[in-house]
Image 1 (cartoon, helix red, strand yellow):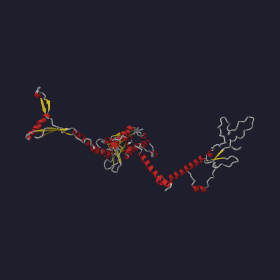
Image 2 (spheres, rainbow, N blue to C red):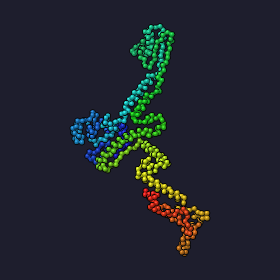
Image 3 (tube, rainbow, N blue to C red):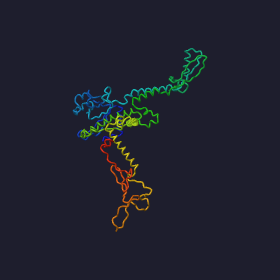
Image 4 (cartoon, one colour):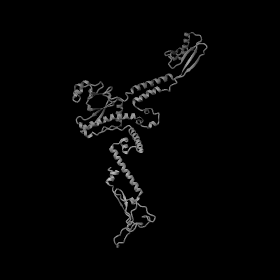
Length: 476
């Protein structure tokens, strides 16, 4: 009904994490509140104010660009205010039930009663990183170009004349000639304008006799590839944001195929804490909607809003712990230092009732395995027997009569007699098997012959003393 699609939840989460707060106004029908919530209207967090008492009791919400209106709050409560009182207020007043306030954190020293933004701790490192990047760019622009040093031979000129000679030579190279405006063409139509040398321009140095005029080149910056200072502030920014470094720095190609929450368990736990705040907000919306519809609290006391976990790190961690416990239990089982019951209760952390049930099921499973082994070694228990060398298998001859079936008799004959016995059995033997209780089969020996050993004779029922002695009383 509320239509929390992907776009709405994405914008909600983004604004919540940036501002630390998010406000929803619940729209209902004042004439018929039992119809429930019609819509949710998001309100800007920078214009909303949460009014509480000194003990933390919520009184009302206000919306204003100029600040909260404390005078209207002192005059009359918002639930008892009339239309005239609401119009006289300088801020829009909301009852506590009209607004759903989602916030992150509950720090009473800094931002209470509001939430704390996730990027609050990263503001300082972000500014420092920006300054370092600007300084690095300026350094590369000023030191990257190559400059030249001109050594000018001034002979025996005095210092003041040497400087004037240097300046005259610089003017010849540095003055910019531009055409003068408003003059007739000719030699006087060109003006020379002074152009101040920049920081990345050449140097002019006078020299004395015994030194020739020469020009040398100053190399540019050599350490342009060293950005360790910038990386330091970038890593400091990642730490403040609680993000793994691989999320922004995809230098490892294999790390891109791994979920972000799987790379860092700390980040996955932070996501689950953030999801808990949104779950509480959604539960509060559902609670108010169901109360407006008239449902009692006992009808939805088991209502739970659960969001999708960021990864299976909890399950993987639990599986690793269980694997280590099983390895320790198998070692103790092999060393025969502890009983199975003690291993289940003390090492595998099962309670007493569950351990007893597990041991009972193990006994049943072992009995079933032994039963299958006995049946496999004695196939006659299932009514299956191998023919002897002189016996003829039933139905092996094509078109031959089946000895297990009675032959057809003419109509004038009397009632059919008993079926003929299979070959290899004496006359009068039926060759039928009878099945015993408890999934145990026994073979009836042919008449006139003793029972075959291992042919599945019925075992006597155990006595009460045997049941107590061998612990055969298995009820599960």
